[in-house]
Amino acid sequence: MISVYYFGAISLILIGLYAVLVKKNLLKMLIGLSIMETGVNLLLVSVGYVAGRSAPILSEGIGPNQAVDPIPQALVLTAIVIGVATTAMALSVAMLLYEKYGTLNVEEIRRLRG
Amino acid sequence: MNGQYASLLIALPLIGAFFVPLIKGAGKKAVKYYLIAITAVQTGIAAWVFQQVYSTGKPIIVMAGAWRPPVGINLYIGHFAALFILIVAAVSFMMAVFSLRAIEVEPIDKYAMLFLLLMLGATGMIATGDIFNLFVFMEITAISAYALTAYNKTGEAAEASMKYIILGGIGSSFFLIGIALIYGSLGTLNMAQIAQLAGNMNATVAQVGLALVIFGLAVEAELFPLNAWAPDAYQAAPHPITAMFSAFVVKAGLYAMARLLYLMQAVESWGSVLKLLIIMATLTVFVAEFAALRQRNVKRMIAYSSIAQIGLIALAFALGTQSGVDAGVFHMVNHAIVKALLFLAVGHVAVTLGGAEMERFEGLGKRMPLTAFAITIGAIAAVGIPLFNVFWSKLRILLATLGAGYTWAAAVVLIASVVEAVYYFRLVHLMWFAGEGERISEGLAVSLILLFLAALVVVIGVYPDYAWSIAQKAGSDIFNVAQYIENVPLMGVGA
Image (cartoon, each protein chain N blue to C red):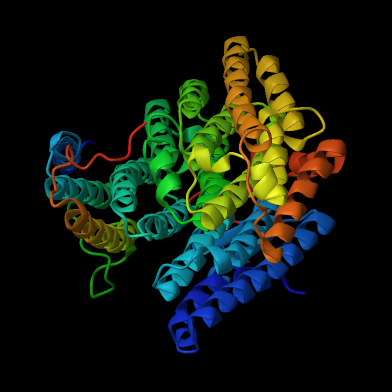
């Protein structure tokens, strides 16, 4: 069964991809990258989601059959941390670029060619 | 000794990177020698693992926390991984020695840390037996590679790094979507179990998932059209790092691609994914060889040549036959040696003479004869002249391509190789028959490494049989998936 979350996730990924490919401002491209990562994370979580079941925390009345799959949630936590690291790295490089070129427009930052 | 010591291969660079700030107190030189010491120990462990795996013929399987897979994460060090971990460690050691001379830009401690993390990431990608773990190691490699590309703090370096980050970000998102699709339909992340269950997978889902994974890894593996970052990053990164990119970071991506591809060979739509990869690989060879022809910067030229060779390896892996995989692995080994030699020598020239533009190489044969000799050996080998190592692997790849019935791919590769000869011989001509100059001292350590690598190129070229038998064992490690499943002690969960 296809859940509505898949559509949300895929549209987030596509919006992010659009921003990365089309926008001229470096910061907007990086925001697009973050949106894309969020979409991927949502997709991962929705893979393990089962309608009507609760969070995979051991408590009264909730056995293995009443909980959703915990593995995608653990994966998403890792993926979020990695995404934050990439974004931090990208922003610091963007700062360096602004220092050297005085602009964030990707069409003006084109010294390397061929 | 117990096989679990192999986990030191992952632990040592991590702990080593952690202690760099403490060593920094003892001075700049101390950090560089520390880097050499850690990589030397890593090479020792890798050599031990290599010896163990090849003498017993059994893979070393490290289970994290003694949990059996698929519950726990495992490292799988079979013939392929043992061979390439040794190459990763040995190349890192040589580049650590080269860093003594090549790296003068501050901060050295950050450089040493990222250097170790890059080595860790590549080792982990090769050794891991879990696809999500593969993703994590890929990101460790990628993030340290982004940072190292920008290390020189020039405008070009920042620009190259930014290109790499954006392409890498898109690639890792694609890879993660691919993992989500595979996990969603099989319910497991363990590679052996994926291979076991792959036959049950819906053909369309498998096709899309596998294609996304390949696209994601193609960024690391520099396949067309996702390799736009590579020449810029190669040109802008510090010289030892360039050699590491070409010698093993790319190889780790390629290996991961080949491994995942063959794990899923039970899938119905497998053939169409192979066709996609063959087209990508052939285009990579073609585009890169012609781009290399018009470069004025030697480092950038060799970077394009490196991309072309990677395309050749990907072509071999995409054939889907045993001989193709064996030839691909053989070419990976040869390419790692040759490109380490070339980038080391060119970087050495760039450090000594202050740049890697074509003009600086005029009369190099008179100014730095040993380095010029090393570049000549590397260039002749890279073109694929008989009696040098690349000849044998190129020949095997072409034979395997013809054997699999892809005559057009073989023809394209041959035409592109002719172009390769043109620009390499132009460089050799420039070094020996043009310009004048005084002799410059070349440095003992780097000269020794250059001689060692050049000797390796010639020895494998004259006696290819031993290296070929190693490559065949490593190739069957990738190709023989049934053996792979059998080797991993899976717990009977979910199957």
